[in-house]
Image 1: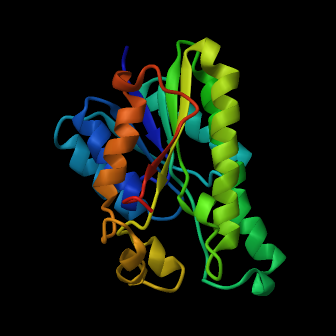
Image 2 (image 1 turned 180 degrees about the vertical axis):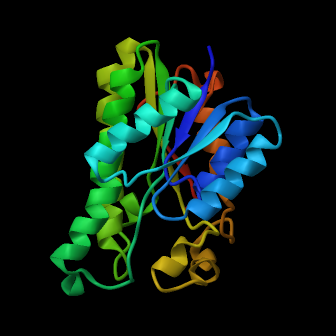
Length: 243
C-alpha cells in the first residue's frame, strides 16, 4: 500500500520533525500550514530534493470548508490519505482563567478541538482500506497547566477523549487511532505563550532534568503510525521525560 501522510501544522516544531521522519520512512508527505507558507515550502523543497513525494496545502483546520478542500488537494497530489497526524494546535499568552476572554477560549478550542475532530472525521470517511491516525495531545491534559494555560490543557484533554472513543468506533474497519502527549519540548510555541525560555524553567521539575526535542516526539508518532504498532489503538503515549 502506498503510504500518504498528512501532517497538520507541519511547517514547524513537532510537525516539521514528524514530516522529516515520515519522509525518511518512505511516506509521501503532505505538509499543512495555516500562515507560514515560506516555512512549509522550504521544508517540502528539502524533502523533495531527497526524492520524497511531497506537497504543501494551506488550510485553517478549524474551518470545515477548508478541511474538505485540504483532503481533496492532498488526494489529488499524492493519493488518498492513509496516515494522519493531527499536530496543528495553538496556545495564547500565559494567564489565569479569571483573566481569559470568551474570544480566547473560542480560538483555542476551535483549532485544538474542533480542528482535530474535523480532520479525524474526514480521515475516517476516506480510509476505506484502513489507516492510522495519531493526535498530538499534551501532558498538560493531566497536569492542568494552572496559572498558564488551563484552556489549552482542557482542549488537549478533549483530544484524549476523542482518541479513545474514535479508536473504538473504527477499530473494526482497520483504522487505528492513538495520541502522543508531549511534555515540555524545545519548540517556538513557548514564545507564543509569552515565555520563550519556558523549557529551561520547567525542565527542573522533569524527572529526566531536561526538555525534549521535537525529533523525540516525531519518532514516537512515526512508531504509532507504523505496522510495528499494529495491535495498539486508543492509547495515549506520554513523551514527557517522566513528568
